[in-house]
Length: 424
Image (cartoon, rainbow, N blue to C red):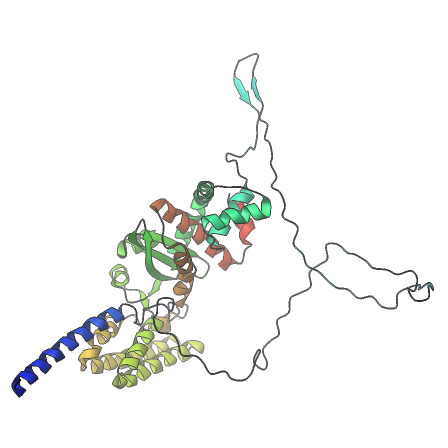
């Protein structure tokens, strides 16, 4: 018969085993469920909202209507005699117009034969080639621009790009040809890409973010540098400050808006830490620990004060005074968190960024969140989900150049096709 002491030992051993198992599972779950997990990778599904019972736009919402285009042709329908009694009808008493918008039938490609005559001078015997503007590539500029936009704006894989060109224009290309066309487009856009870097180095504020991207099965990092009118993508092996220095230079005078990654503070002390990041982490802790909820509300209150001060900004002196008050308040909150071992990591994040949380109060042109950079990355994250990764570094270079020019062109409000074509 088993003694009660043995039963206690068995239960203690089982308890130890279960605690270790729970700890292992929590660590595995943390990789998928934390404040930085994007919705696409989250295992948790957001709770379904209860229907309000009202359909359509809210009251007072401005109605959206497409403007009528200018007709490019017309078809008029007339009747001379009454179909019922054959009496002549005369002039119509009313005319109605129905506009029909239609795309043209798929058009075959134009094939232009460039005939370049060569000569030999009878006097000096020099070889003379007729002046010409013949292309160096077999494919024209329209094809180059269209292929680049199908791949990097419309997110089509190579085979879909090929089938789209064949369906619309009867143009048959191989996947190698599509890749070579994109390589030539990237080479032509290289000067524009370098110009973007020069312009970003002169910006008053740059929003920077990064995410992982597989290249040849290895982990690289996709960086974005965003200003008011520029978007730059960079794909590098490193996630360190050298990448920031490579793009912004050694003497960048502007403010960098970023998350808490140490590479930024290693490069510059003129930072604005992202409030969206820290509030997301705070929200997750409040879900996990009921007694953290008060801290989360306090942080939200500080953020609300920042937004109010920026909405109707007082004088610089008043804003500096508010910065000192809010810095002290945030420091006190971080100190109170430190009393709980579960919150010490989060408390350290707040303290480490204490000089960077309120830069946006002094410099009103700086946003308190890094949402601008996150939105810029979103387009390439979708492409990453579609293609999985890149095969070679050459593909990474093609991608960063073409997508940077496309994203910047869209911000500038310029027509994509014509702008890309003009750069070729």
